Amino acid sequence: MSVAGQILRKQLVKKGSDITVFEKNETHYYQPGFTMLSGGLLGSKEEDVVKASAGLLYRPVESVFDEQINIVRDEVGEFDPKQNKVITKAGKSYTYDYLIVACGNKLRYDLIEGAVDALNDPESSVGSMYDFTYAKKINQLRAKFNGGKIIATQAPMPIKCAGAPQKWVNLCEESMRVKGIRSACDIHFYTALPAMFGVKKYSDELYRLATSKHIHAHFEYDVQKVDHQRKKVYLKKIGPKSTKNEVVIESFDLLHLVPPQRPHDFVAKAAFCNDAGYVDVNKHTLQSTRFSNVFALGDCSSLPTSRTAAAVFSQSPILVYYLERQMLIDAKTTTSTSTATPITTTVAYDGYTSCPIFVGDKKLMLAEFLYDGQVSETFARFVDQRTPTTYFYYLKRYVFPHVYWNYVPLAQWFGRNGFNPPHFFLQTPSLSSGHQALHKSH
Image (cartoon, rainbow, N blue to C red; front, side, top):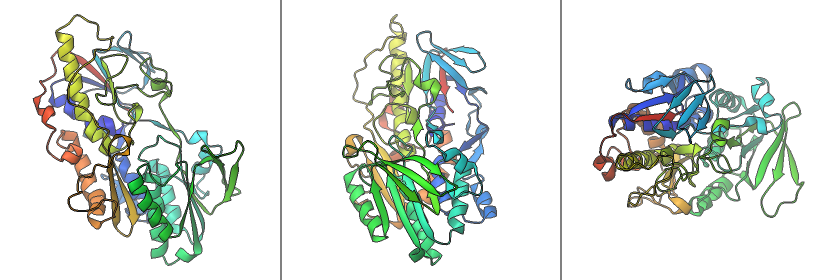
């Protein structure tokens, strides 16, 4: 189940909608916590990690479902938006009045030659924080590391939280200092980006911090292959200045991989998706540009903003608002819901997202911005947020997980608005009874 799906469902239930959710998974994970796990913030001993992870990083999926939601324990096989149908892999067909796609993206480790074998080999020195099992592995590798070359990578955009890969690098560097072996460690960060971060204000400071810690940053490189037996990683130079066959081969003693991330196949082939396979939505309303009764948010959408939980906190009330608007329009017209209906209003998603970046030593940089990288900081009156603080660290480490499990399922948390719903969210009427809203989670 995606973070987007977790956030959205209760908001719809509170509005009185009839919801069916397609959910095959038995466990829901707090994905933003994987950096804490892999970086050692939950402990290094296996028994400590197991104890800390239970309840904090995962819970039974039923615990975050409202009892009013209809749950279908099956995977979606395909969408047929022209007929308003969802067909499951088991071959069963469901008809909807309105469809919300919130299924996240798929981790494609298989697109890196040798990566899956390396990650699944318990004897290899390769791990990844983007998967719970692999995050536990990289945490153990980090804890047992005694010196040598550490290589960390970052895949091309879009990925979940573009700042996450360097969070692990920073926490790893700190742990080597704490163990007293930092001088024996050579740390390299290979990123597909042309800079440390997509927003210059934060990028410049992150680069300065990395340099001060002797973390070697290499820009515009994409991992092509991993040979875990020979401990070699192959990185292709990308970007406008790269040559066609320019590949760097690095040896490593510890490798942290970030996988390419792509839309699920059942999403990418749908008629409401763009050429890249993402649900093509209006970036301000989250409504499909092709079918007015289809909406999407989070990683699987075409929204040109960073994929984070904070972004979805801001997107979800906007989506609910426009879903209700569309229902009112449909109730007053005989126009088919399969033809996009333009809506004029001042309510708009501005691209807000936030990336809390661990920099080590119990400090964190809280990057906040809108579309086009426009800085928009919640605490700007008190601090320049490019400066890492302990206060932000404790927000990320303790407050955000508590909020996620205890207030998000109740639709009582609205991101940077805290417990205060956006003014428009309170003004929208309840969803019309008799409408069936299908929600695809994953």
